[in-house]
Length: 279
Length: 279
Image (cartoon, rainbow over all chains, first blue to last red; front, side, top):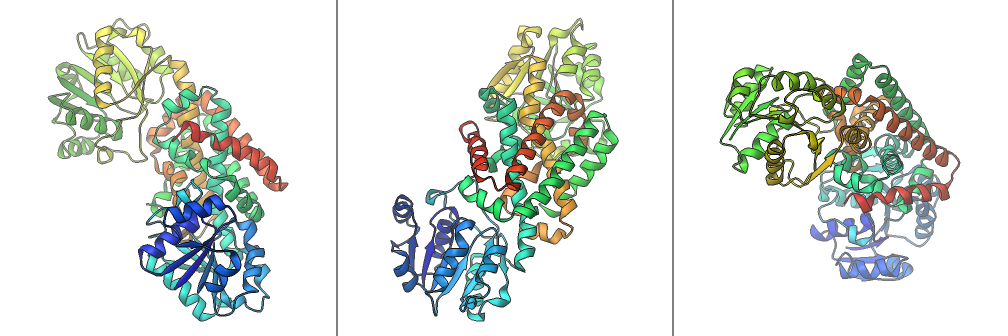
């Protein structure tokens, strides 16, 4: 099977590696608007060759979009305009606008909307990770609007990579993604800004940072090019969960201000229950 | 050299392992108010024996306090009252009150106030980690008030464990610790509370949590017993940095609200500069 991957960064590159390592493809064609990324992806063995978009779409059995979410809907339509037998999938972090835009397309059935729940704070082809995705979930949205053979192909690949599949509506996906994924990104950026604002002595940050600080601030290294479109495309859900987060911080701050150890004990006890959910 | 460790949890237990693994002690005596912890520490080989406090202090060359910070100052005084040749050290996360309380003690010189910049979200003797501390910094506060032989002993141990030593005043320590360590803890608790508040479907959290969410929320598993005293003892610094953090979140929230991609790009670009500092 020939797979074309459009966007040869963290997600596209890691997906290419996963397909190759498991023998799920015999040819990966890469497409990237950045020639340096394209060349690097070939050099790193992520893709076998680079082709212009039209040719790459034409020659593929499966076309995967792994580009920033603001660019996905229009490109999805343009690619659907050109396919017949091929299957098209995306790997983006927001789904509502995409699903709305392709809803009435004559070849909607050839598209499978997916979101693999994996990422790191790095980007570009060099950020591709061997063994990524395995053990993480993947959300498939509006599965009922995709042709059965298209769903079978895409889910079959994800299953063989070792990813449990979760079905969800597009709206539902964006809501849960804001709660569980997008909020972490905003808090991490804000934490980095806070520390850079308060701690003018960078050598102190470097020297004093323990494992806890590093893990909470790690996501602040993530590229704005990827995340700004996600935050803006999922604006209302992100605003809503951010309001709640600021509220929770204000409550904890007031407890500290009043030396309310009992209140803190109750709040932290509740927060600790995340242990049950995240191991 | 005989070392007595008071408090056989994450920090005390890991310190015991570090000393034993590097052959820096030939006998570790453990003291813990919780008999189950004491028994477990012996079973896990963290300590060679458990002794009552008086005996353990009497027989030791070095006594290390690894208990919650609210309990350190009084116990430090009580132990200083009983030592002559021995060296006493603590490993707590706040220093101002401790240093104030022991300042005028006749045997202040026998005490070395330290804070190794390492921890995990787990607690108790089972949480002790082999190879902890190595490569992390350790802060030594008010070094000039400790006897030279006491400083030499304690710093020598930390150096042989592989920890760069940073000298700092007690006030300065608490300020920087709030910025770089304590704030992460509060944001992680608040993030867990936010997600538990908004996301009523726990199965969704479990299924959708990617690496990013897990790393930012990881600290929310940490015990309140350890952290409430730290947050309250370092109250004014923590309140100050929390105010700034809430402010940064509000700024980002307003940018998202106004679709201010340019503003987000600038803010995220600045947040990204944490890359220079934390690798």
